[in-house]
Length: 183
Image (cartoon, rainbow, N blue to C red; front, top):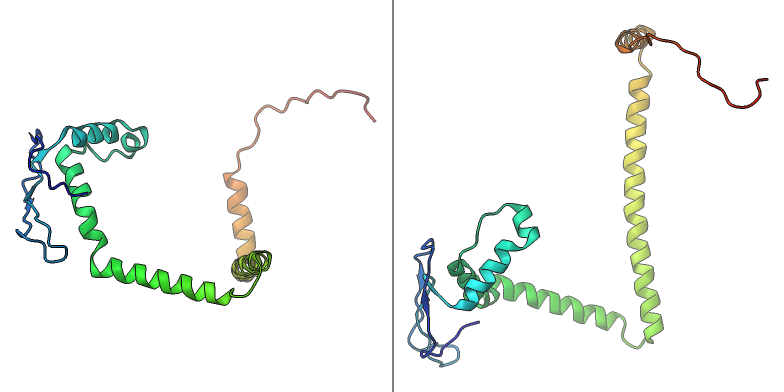
């Protein structure tokens, strides 16, 4: 979100935590439009309102991340487009587009019901594989516990003795009330 209107009122930032500025070239080589300097120490009322909203939001307060300044909000909104146009992000988008095209080609010529059924079958297969991996892990854990449990009699006696020593004896054994007939 870059504003190129020079006649807009810009207010001075209050917190002063961001002194960085982004210098744009006089003529943008991509689109031929004129860019102006982005100074993150200056911001608009919108940035103040957005920072105030974020700082007072319950989830943000719960996260205990500290207050956002309007300059930080302006920096995020301004640089978001530049971040989206980095080579890494462009490559990720192209990869996702190619994957979607490959998936569309896979379901080419099928009715919507058939596509839905095949996608559901693929989800079920993935879920089965996930549960099989969990079951294998549980079997391995159980085998490990069985191996540990098959220790010698002396080891087991020592474990039982230590457990009996740590269990406190009940001091007052009062009979519990029973409701109904006794047999």
